[in-house]
Image (cartoon, rainbow over all chains, first blue to last red; front, top):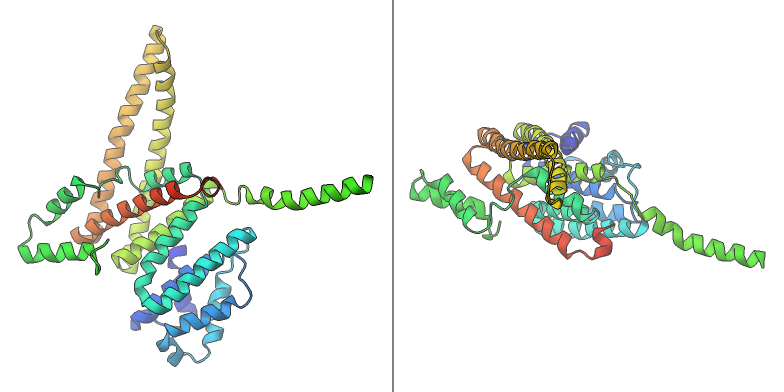
Length: 182
Length: 161
């Protein structure tokens, strides 16, 4: 399964993600970023840039595995998918996006992964036609307007009605996230 | 003169090729699969679930997506029949029977859609528990809304690429 590839990689490079949460997060990030890159020819020098950006996030890996460049090279090689090739323009678009993502990764750590997947999803949707995207949205739910207006209030009430005040507060906070924006 | 035409042809070809190859890079199925893949990553990250939960979640969601897609196809077929009837001013008895069947199909799909949603809700509730389920519902709707907005805002050339 593609979304479990980071686990396969962890196994292949003989690292145990369960022993190291940071490594686990990074491997997930690399998986996503590499997948993004595999859709476009990699610009010259980009791999070096990415390795540097990921190294900044990976002090633990650095200390455990001195041959980090070789490690990342193997990871990148795992993700090359020649069947997906985009036009130069689109490729540059993806590369630029990946560049921004890797900078963000370095600056904000693992919390950026959420917006990375969201950005990837939106970018993929933009590469499709409106009808296909609408069909896809309908396939994930036939009631996707649930969060709007009153419905979210009744949903929240339904879920939290049997909890005490403290637990209710905890649930609501866990929905909202750190900045209060889901 | 012939050389001139040949050169002109080459220049036209040079400009036309990228435009031609830009079309139909991916099939709708490929786009659909890729969106699913990223969507599952997104959910796994947002919900912070275990590897086992992620695997089960993907299985449930894939089954439900297949079920909804089949239902939507049936509904579209029913709507095509309904449109034909609504465009007519009068119908023969056999046409009315056909209309009745199309309406029943439509009604059946509506019920089955609701069942699919309910089944998905229950399966995920069993898997995640209430808090993660609630977050799942919110994240799913949020991503759907953002995707819709991004498609609406995208320039015509991008959205139809």
